[in-house]
Image (cartoon, rainbow, N blue to C red; front, side):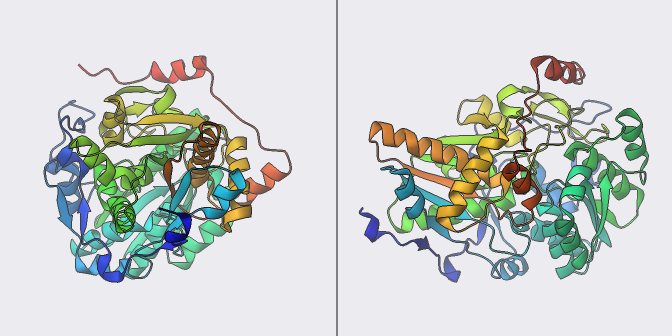
Length: 457
């Protein structure tokens, strides 16, 4: 198909917006390992999880068999504010690179939260409201998830308590203020407001925090306050289920024009965006219907896939959450403060970890100066300032397109543009001023954290 036959932006009609979330676990021959009770090391039951999570979300978390979940009408009505989101052909980037590759990106930044996170935030807020809860607690890294959840809670009139990774809290005051606009309380983590926060600060004075730290604090607050539950923006099975709307829309748009991607690329921190984008394509791969090359891109400063180990580990630094089998650097691992963006989690989604362990997808790590070079190159030709997280995928999409230039192959590349970078200008400033450095943990550092992994029989 010639370039002129494909529109610049592929929009789906409102009636083409998915009515179902797709659960990739239903097509996995080897299911993700179950969450374990940190005390007994036995699989967590719904009753075990009830003090922490919303009831219906627990059912979604534990369900490995239901392939399609109907999206409640109330959630679909909210989705209509910004969905279906566009699938964009990067004609200008292709021309600038001089590549025969065809590059598409699924743009999730066309809502006030600025990212894909709203897809799951509104679902989790809906189920919390349906259960009759007073409010929810959560953590946020770069701030996209906290912003999205504050919007969703405002919509359903729920209280929202956000623990924001301290380094991001300080670097992104405007993201913090958007959360407050929507009524959320925002606390830098680790903090003196929780027992776990105090413990972490005593052991790591002056730390900039991590998602693992913030998770611990948010969980402590949720279980200590009647009428509250904890919600999470990544990693969990339920989150990847909600985010599957990204991939289902992408595939529907590509199918509409008879386009089959060769390579699908997504940034990977905890796995929400990547898991959502690849889910229907991975389903076809698992069922033996089609094959795709799927690439997860993570920061070299927090390389869970590429340098972590596949083992049971605590999901949080405070070691109060269930144990999850995942690719992990160790729950004590805290990325360097100069690491830009929200990909600061020590582990990876159990679903994605299992798929990666089976060789069904690849993973690469990239340094942040190379990421920001790609971000700037993209912004100058495509007209969108990308989030640092998204720019990890942009970096590898450009690299793959340049390989096509060398070989003459006309591959079709699809990547997830998870959000915009307008609240990330401190990081862009550091890049422009030459103050950004490429921190890469040493083998000795990582070995120290691996040595603390829990021993599971």
